[in-house]
Length: 446
Ligand SMILES: Cc1ncc(COP(=O)(O)O)c(C=O)c1O
Image (cartoon, rainbow, N blue to C red; front, side, top):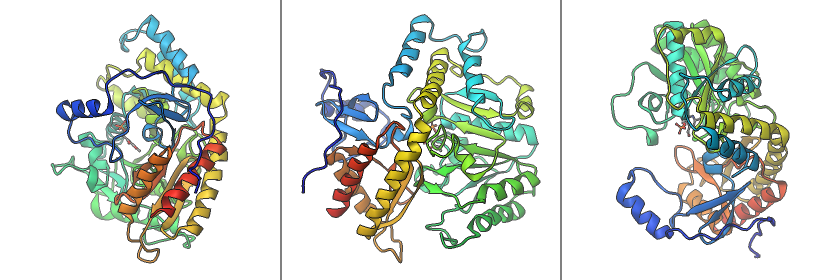
């Protein structure tokens, strides 16, 4: 069989003159956190990127279908984003919020304009974990309640507070976790008790949140937090009506509803700018990171003026939050999404990919489930469609083969058996066809 061919691309990487991958790996082993892992048996070194492609040190081009873990939203080194960063870097890089700088409120106004309802006040921080920590603090300060409901199969970060919200044993250290966090059933129609054939699945999963509040909390909660589509958990899309019912339950128990848009936001779902909009709800607090900065360390929390008042009783300060360079980048990212119609492209290419993956599902029995929304896609591999035994080793083999053939994808789910496809939103239909050929070859080789 002919090897799949990457679509042509008019860009030559610059010659690479730095240390070899082996040298970089050796230095990393000697001096860098040993708990971080690298993808692939032979680690890949990426030294340049353009649009939806990256180049290794030998100049080989790959389709980046994982976007640096769902972070490069508008494409690697997008000229408008690079120009905005360079222009600001040239003038002043850091001031902090104790002085005025025009970039911070200008960006906050642009971001607030993308939000529904009264979500008009922005806080800027550096990472998704920080954003979620701040959101929980805000909910507790505003409501006077303490307990928080999160979801199993959710990922919200690696700080002590967000590790408690996260519900994957793989990401949780065996230390005393902050108290007051309760995990409801993941509304996962593939693995959970109510499947795709259950029309009332949304209400049934939502009823578990009501039970959880009734049995495990004082009946009052500070917040409910959920990713709008579970990312690390393998692109789990909630049944219709789920968030609507949960939000009603949580609000009746005095709590605020927090949407973690770290992966699903900024147009990636295609049909909507924010993932929560696919469920027809308006949260009280929205957290964002990753795609917001196209790779810059930028994250945000957006809430209503009333809720924001709760944090004025003490000083809330973040040294890098609102940094002029990051704000320039964030604003440029919003402009690119708008000008280049990247939300519409996510819908178009995402539907094309999903249709192709469903065809592959008919051909390869190892594909148990194909799910997603726009360019947030998961392909769950199982050894047996009846028992749903996770096909972890097989998933790793397809993932390795895809790299050999020139496509970088992600892996996820508690059992590591879900292929994650979340490319920069500038990916084309030809790239999608290439990726489908790669996956077909990888699955065919099992
Ligand atoms: C949904 C979600 N929330 C929060 C985070 C934490 O973000 P960060 O790694 O920037 O702290 C992540 C990171 O993967 C995420 O996927």
